[in-house]
Image (cartoon, rainbow, N blue to C red; front, top):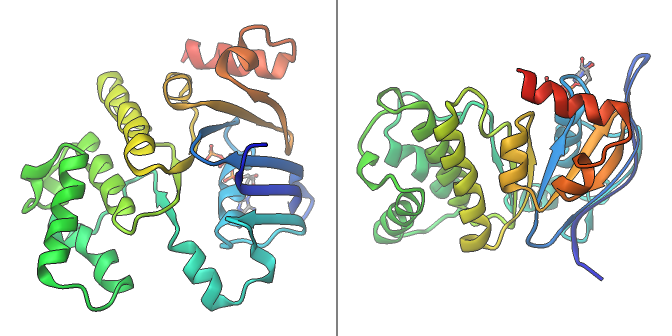
Length: 249
Ligand SMILES: Nc1ncnc2c1ncn2[C@@H]1O[C@H](COP(=O)(O)OP(=O)(O)OP(=O)(O)O)[C@@H](O)[C@H]1O
């Protein structure tokens, strides 16, 4: 039996008469990269927001690291959130802060009493890990799109999360930089032993980073499995068209 770090059961969410999630079941297993695929508007962001309780489900349960999120008080919820790293689509760096300050910010805000030496060590270690030690005194505006993503990942890792959520990690990047980011996602899993959900439209990213795929269609996961299992012999025309669409555009 594989250990689940996230366990989603029977999740429903509607906005008015827009039934977005219609009975979602999904597990994220310890140590894996799980890729969540789905058309624009299929509910991927809604699902992620429910996971971190930025939205509340209408029905169903979410257990993260063994804890039922519906039963947590705010203090315990915030503790749990610290174990989840959220790497946003747009890297979400603070433009007015240097790279060093961007990385220090979550650290000093969430962990009190760290020495200057400990903070420096952690920041430098993370910048080394993402291959950008020389950017430490730069401003985000001086970085390329790919570098910003790397710094965003470093900042997310600084609190040692057990779970990583990557939201469209390769969006807006050229193909070579996409491959670098895919490699980084795999490196993070190895080095920091994280379990990750990668939300993407990019099938190259899915193939390179995903141990397993899950395809969200009409409010449910219709197919889960390895990239080959899901796409090689796809009978469901919606999955087939998702694949075809990706390689047309
Ligand atoms: N706060 C909200 N209030 C009302 N409707 C919402 C809200 N958030 C999302 N929706 C609706 O839920 C549906 C799913 O949206 P969601 O953002 O999860 O799609 P997505 O799969 O992440 O799309 P994309 O790939 O374009 O980011 C859409 O129809 C959207 O309009």
